[in-house]
Every structure is written in C-alpha cells, then in structure tokens.
Image 1 (spheres, helix red, strand yellow):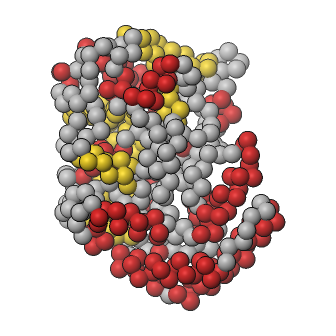
Image 2: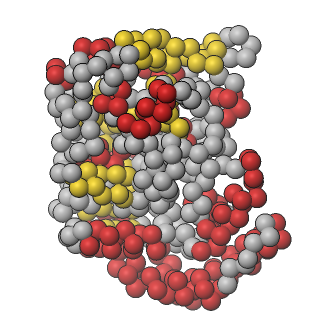
Length: 432
C-alpha cells in the first residue's frame, strides 16, 4: 500500500516543520500544503543556506518535485508571487511550472488585510495576536460563500462583481465600527489585474491530480502550518488561528479521501514556545526561559515577533496525539536543551477545584487555570548540536527523550539536532 505522510505541528506552532518536510520530500513525488496562509514561516537550511517559505510547500527546493496548494489554504497572490520571485532570484528552477494551485482556494485581497488590522487595533488589551495579514477575514468569506477564489480569476467580470459586493459590506465595518479608511474598488481591481496573468497558469485540479498520483502508487507528503494548539476547534480558543491545523484537515484541505492519509508525523520542539497572546501553563519568566529564547533563536521567521518559552508540556502534547492520531513524533531543537542542569517536564495539571488531569482541557479560560505538575530530570552538559546518531547522544538526553515517549504515549521517529537538513537522527523512517 502507498504510504503518504501528513506532517503537523503538535504544539503552538514554530516546531520546525519546514525542515522536516524538506528532509522527507525527496522520498515523494509531491508536497501538498493543505491549510493556513502566509501567516506562518517555514525555515529551511540546506548546506548552511537559509530559505524562508510562507505559502509555497517546503518541497520546492527539490527540483524534481511538484508542489500543490490545496483549497484549505487562503492565498495572498501578492505574497505568493513575491515568494516565487525570491526563489527565482536564489536560482531555484521552474518554480512556477512546478507549483499548482487549487481553483477552489480563496484569495486574500486588500479589504481582508484592512479589516484584520482594524479589528486587532480596536481590541486594545484584548487583542488575539493576529499577524494582520487578512487570514481570518478571508476564511470568514469562505464560510459565508462570498470568496473570490483562484479559479474566478479567469472571469474578470465575475471577480469585479464579487469585489464590489464585498466592499459594500467591509467598508461599512471599516468606517463605522473601527473608524478606519474605506478600501477603494479601483485600487482592489488594479491589484488583481497586476497578478491575474501570472496566477492563472498555475491553477490546476489539485484534488484529482493527487488522487491519480496515489492510484499510480506515488508517495505524497501533506504539509500543515501553525500547530494543533492553535486549531480553530481544538486549540486554546479564542487565541487560535482561523483554520483547522490537525491531521484530519489534510483530507478536506487537499481534496483527498481520508484513507490516503497513512502516517501522521507530529513535529514537537524539545521545549515549548508560543507567539502572541493566550494561556501558556509552562511559560518561564526566569533566566532559563531567556536562555531557551537566545539559544533557540526564538523569533518568528515571518513577523520577527519574540516567542514565549517554557518547559516541555507533555499534557498538552497528549491532547495533540489524541486529536491527530499521531503515528510518530519528531523532536526538534534538542540541542537547545544542552547545558541546563535540571530539566522539568509537565506531566499534568492541578485544576482550581484541586483535582488533576493529565491532558490539556479545551478553551483559553480552562487552560489559564491549569497549574503544571512537574517531574524533574537531570540535564546534560555535552553538546548535542549536529549529532547524527542516537547512540552518540548523552545518556541524560536519551533519558529525556524516553520520558517524553512514556508520558505522551507515542514513539519518537526522528530527532533534529540542528537547523540543517543533515543534522537529523533517524530512528524510524515514516515512509518505511
């Protein structure tokens, strides 16, 4: 049976999915992005050279691979073309010829960005922590059945009709609810006219293509963005993203049947981080947290925002394992834990009524009232950076990994010990 792999983030995002997708991609004939927008950056390092991708799937550096953007992704045409131009300038070959966009993918247009930013400004101290890139409003249009979709670009009159109707709705909100400037119809259409001719040749029936590839026995890799704990349904709502980040979303977001999703690889940082607002039970405010941020270079690759850092939260990961059906885990940034004398791992929470739970509850309010229950492990002084063999890891590092497996109930398949493609320890290959 063909084995296709879904790669998802198992924490609050920023776990290092891009590197792992790039590393696994050479085993496939196609990489598929199935949700999110250009609000998440995937950083790849190959032979010391860094590439940051936002919309384009992380397999694009493999020049024999096709890459697909499914209907679960909201696409900013301007951001996409900017990314293509960056890759072309870096010498990546045939990017536009190898990139296929589902005609059903909704487009992010200037009025989405304007509303996203105006809303966040109006929230004041209660802000969500959105990137302000129009992601949420674009998903709202999709659900409200008013999206301008990629396939609509073939009919300019239809696009103009939709834009005019949407602006009638959005400009009322911008002016009267948020005191912001309205968006002009002519400005939106000028931007659409500027990108239409480049986007149209990339539009293809992604759903059918993927199904036919699977029928021929070809392997596929499905790439998620953000992380499970930011999922619109199962994350720390309302401090979440606007799409489903879990493995099951790959079927709907790529347009493939669930039986095509054979293996779920959960990407897990060796500690925990979070960007933006929202509860974070194991967050550290001391020199250990500062050290994690500095050694881990914990700043957003797209936004530059600093990431909050904390101890590994196994109780939160158990929720991710449950909702995703994680087959195996990839532990990233193990080297960032080097030199910590005593390491704590959260194995559960004490709740306000004095009871305990070993799994993350749903909703921000419930999570904010969780007090972590910790187990303490001895750290290690030896460097794990760039180690490529499990046996070469320090004994206490191996004990830490074993504890994660035992508490969370899922096996570790891969360990990443540095940002480069080659700085990877393989324990069990997802495709084998």
